[in-house]
Amino acid sequence: MPLEGTFPLDPEKIYYSMDELTLDTETGPQTMRVGAWLNVDPVRIHRLIIKDKVLQVNQLEVYMPLMSKLRRADPDYYKKFMGLQLVIDYPGYSSGIKAKIPFENDPVGFYKWWRKGKHEDKVHLSLGNRVLLFQKVAMMEPKVMLKKDLEILK
Image (spheres, rainbow, N blue to C red):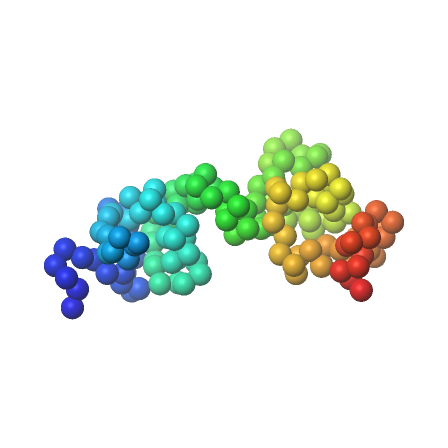
């Protein structure tokens, strides 16, 4: 039975920004509104939703603001999570596009932009996506590939 004034996580409940939630912290259990947790520890809240799948939240009221806060609070975590869904500035497009579009439609151009253009910090590619990209480029234009990338395919 929870202590009075604590609000343990309920995996069946859909949380809104004004709902109270008690989480364990370094200083012991702490209770805040979900909206406040987004400011205090957005990465932890995101992991509870996506990785652990124990926290369900309202998409508009909690998840969308969370993604915005996550981008600012921990850009590396955000890029890693977003992967090819990340919106990038890519040559030939007037506005930002998802990295997935040039990755799939122009693998050689994307490879040149990402690897040779030194934009590896802009888009995180999982090992699987890197291998897939390297395979496509190796079939289409193997001469543009760096030796270290060709080695991965061997």
